[in-house]
Each structure stands twice: as C-alpha cells, then as structure tokens.
Length: 201
Image 1 (spheres, one colour):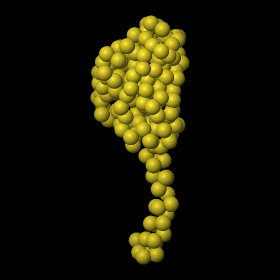
Image 2 (cartoon, helix red, strand yellow; image 1 turned 60 degrees about the vertical axis):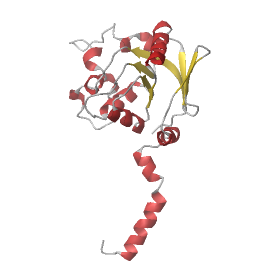
Image 3 (cartoon, one colour; image 1 turned 180 degrees about the horizontal axis):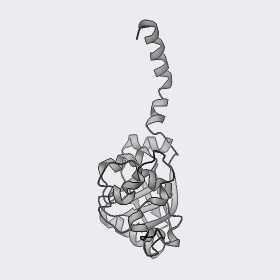
Image 4 (cartoon, one colour; image 1 turned 90 degrees about the vertical axis):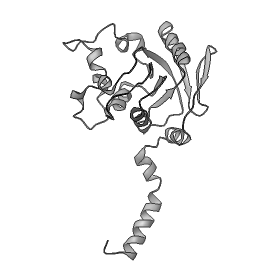
C-alpha cells in the first residue's frame, strides 16, 4: 500500500448526499478481483449516457477536475453494501483523500485499508471546501496527515481527527498484509517451536 504523508492537489466537489456503493461502482463491475481498472467504471450510471458517452455536465467529467486527488462530498458517503470495490474504484480514479461530514462505517474502514484517507469534518467546513473547489478549481488544497491539518494557502486551515493506529498505518503504507509481515520473525519463531514440540501438528 502506498504511504500517505502529505497531499497537495486540486479537489472536486461532488454535491451529493447518501452516495451508496452501488453509485460508486455498480454491481455489473464487481466480477473482477483486481484492484486496478475500475476507475473508468466509477459512478457509471450518473457519469455516462445510455450509449456510454461521458455526460459533460457531471462534475467528474469536467476537464478542470481531471487531475483531482481529493473528493469533497456530502453526508453518509459510501452507504449501502460493503463492497470493497468502491474504494478500489476511487483509488483507481486517482483519489487519495475523501472529505465529507460523515461516512458509512464499512466504507470508512475499507478506505483506510486501501490507502485512502477519509476525513470527517463539520458540515460548515465541508461547505467552505466545496465552495472553494467550485469557485477556484485550480486552487490546491494541502492535506498534512502528520499534523492532521487541511490548508489552502492563507484562506483557511482546518484540523481533523484520526485514530492513531489508522494514522500509523497510512503514514507507513501498512495494510492488513503489511501489518502481518511486520510480525514475520515472531511467526517464524512460533512455527519453528511448534514443529519441534508438536511434529505431528
């Protein structure tokens, strides 16, 4: 998993509440077990027309947000089913950080495990970020995970909360496999001891 320390990037404002995981990545794209290649299908039902052509008015199709790595959106983002393909699709689109007033619990947890930083902020702060992204699409927002701050030059500075363990994992690029590998020496020692004491096991 890629480490996350600081991110300075443009943000895209997705003014929607209750965006569920079927909106993020519709069920017909869940056949793959690969984490890559899903970005093109993200938000498919609201991003493309019936012929598969991009809808020019949909915010994620607008050229000014083409390189956005921060997604700013509404309450209860990631609700619905628990599909892990949702953060895979967002990450494949290039998003490393999602800011919203609230998240669905399973999506929130899955995001951390896939190297995405979900940040919950008060609604008024999210609205300020949303307005900033709409009115000045080229303006970059900086996320500093170590300091737990969100800044935009001298325009604003917000602080955010994060569980210390999740922060440690992101800063060090540790997913569940990485955390297990950190204990590889202890695991090897246990296996060696068990093979000697219980050779029949």
